[in-house]
Image (cartoon, rainbow, N blue to C red; front, side):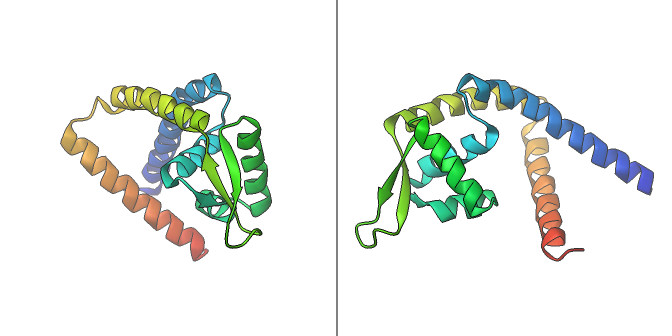
Length: 148
């Protein structure tokens, strides 16, 4: 494949990403969440209890941004901070019942949206796409880490 064809492929992937985000954003706006806030809520709900620094690390954001993110979710009463019984300096984040309910409601909407979105692919195509996207993501991450 020529470099211009590869660049066009890159542009198509970017366009697909943008369009899929356009499908997701209105669902999150309905719940007054950004995509990063949703990802943090998802991480917290699925882990039941997680340290603030682990949220920041997982989302690949700076600790200060992680703290601000947690503050916003706490103000929305979706999560709560809980001090460790062993070490009061350690703070864990847990979802509230409202947070769990919100996450599960959004997830139901996402399931329908993504079934419709990926429904144009058969099962084999879907599996192959997952493999290809995973391979490209892993390679791009490696390149960034190694500054290639």
